[in-house]
Image 1 (spheres, rainbow, N blue to C red):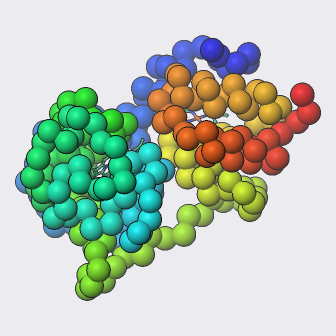
Image 2: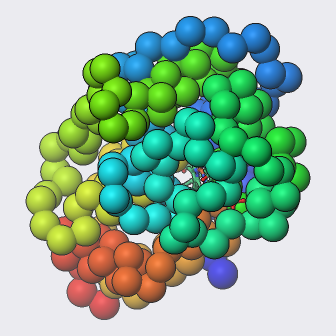
Image 3: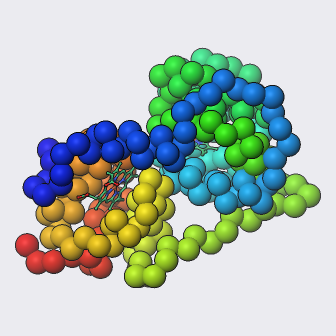
Length: 220
Ligand code: HEC
Ligand code: HEC
């Protein structure tokens, strides 16, 4: 269902936009040595779906603390796809590189809704960052606090909405809208059905809808 006023041809725009963000998956190249600090920055792409703190729970995807060396599909509190479970073995940097190049080529049918990263350096940086996510790592690169820019007011839902919406496009696109709660609700639906946004848990969705309505809302 498409809310009134959203122009046609969005699917084509979507494809272009996503390709610009993530590039077309390319065959895995040799693993290059990455830079964990740059990887921490690039990890913002992943943090809409992944927690990377010790003891942090699963989000849309499993927690990634200690993931290098961990069994593939082995976090206890996460319900993995049968396809990823079927891979077996432990995550090495080489396997992570293949997975991040194109999750769906690595494990066809995986539920990780992420097109893949064509840039070998960017993958290497993220993998270096993932390697730092363990107890006693020489230097744990702290993920930088997210800067949502001006006019993304603090309040319940700020981080959830900011991370999620910013994972595909600028928040300016969101901030310039003034919609009623009902229309925001339809827009979220549209973002999921037509633009590939991951379905949120009912609680998170409610939090995000509340945030958008409170700060960028108009009466019905
Ligand atoms: C749209 C949500 C989403 C995004 C964005 C995303 N992931 Fe995932 N990820 C998932 C889901 C869901 C799974 C579980 C897949 C399955 O069960 O098939 C997963 C699985 C993984 C796994 C396997 C973990 C394990 O325990 O075996 C790794 C590693 C991973 N993701 C890394 C990343 C990295 C690095 C990024 C950013 C470049 C990223 N993901 C972006 C949703 C996402
Ligand atoms: C998986 C990617 C993705 C996510 C996540 C996402 N969007 Fe979008 N969104 C798109 C695409 C693609 C477009 C269309 C391209 C464009 O207009 O630049 C779009 C367009 C929009 C528009 C403009 C609609 C119009 O009339 O042009 C708004 C407003 C919007 N998104 C709000 C949001 C909000 C709010 C969130 C977070 C709750 C969000 N989006 C999350 C992909 C996404």
